[in-house]
Length: 129
Image (tube, rainbow, N blue to C red; front, top):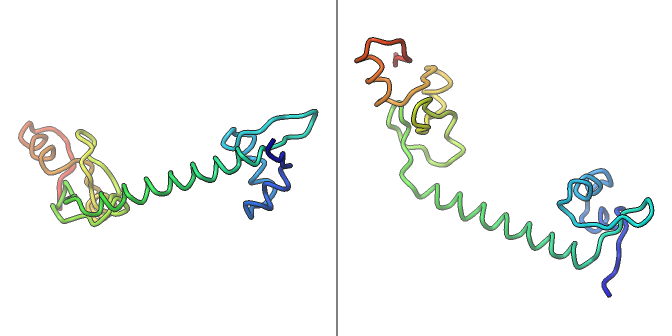
C-alpha cells in the first residue's frame, strides 16, 4: 500500500506554502481522502498529479511552438504577430487577431474586412486613423 501524506507533507514535497497545497486539495486538483477532520493524499495520487502537470506543460509548450511557427497576421494592419502573446484583442465579428497597436492604441475593434463592410453600409464602425 502506498504512503498517505498530510497536506503539510504534500506542501513540503512540492515546495509550496501550506495554503497553496490546501487549495489544490480542496479544489480536487490533487485527489485526497478526508479521514476524520484531516485530509490525506496518497503518494501514488501525488505522483499522478505531478505527471499530469508535466503533460499539461508539454502540451502548452508544443501548442505555443506551433502557434509561433504559424503565420498569424493582425486583422487591422496586416503585420505579422510573432506569438499568441502578441494578440491584444480580437475582431468583434469574426474573432480575427488584432495587435497591440491596432487594438490598444488605435482602438480598432474590427478587422479590416469588417471595417470595410461597415463603412460601405454607412453604419458606425471603428475606422483606422
